[in-house]
View (spheres, rainbow, N blue to C red):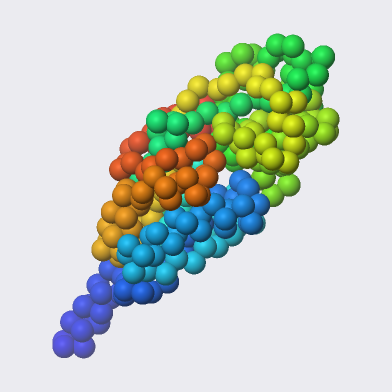
Length: 290
């Protein structure tokens, strides 16, 4: 009888620990941003922010670099990434969902950029493109997208196009950017490899020192959607999440000025999973499973 009771208690303990990890001060946690830029650019952008978080929390942040969007989402769902910064569509694909995923990442903050907590997508073309004068002219043309799972680099644009009678996947010839890099979409348009490109707002400015950005113009802008999510895997100890969140919400402005995150992020604001419900509605509209 005692053996049965012991076994029962042991199983309860083990079950309660599934998906949960405990960290001590000074321990290492992992962080990743959805890889929309090169690894060098990602490392440089997050270095001042992660150093600040380390100072304030006593934790060691190890930045990891998934090779593409799919790997980022997979690693987050599996708990291989403790903290993540992801576009809202990637976030809903790695957050818990009833009947689909028991564990996953949960939003703890949302990025504030240009004074708000939303962002949008752009259709870009060269200023000297004589074949595209209005949005409807992209029909039958070649376009570069960041990736089929990119919010600001395809899905926002696909929803916009559908509202204007165009299905990008059927009415245009699309090329997915190698490694899902936004810079490569802009360069493809700049070098005339593409008639148009789909990128998120704020990305053109990142290439201002590399190319004559005045040769690129915005053909159309999509509606605004919830900004990027800073999330934590639900297996990370709640005390660690609390410490990181508190530090995240109090990052000084000068740290963001050094970081120069896409979209000119200037702060993080408290948010939870429900803030991203509009993105779930978008996913349903464009047929993206999450």
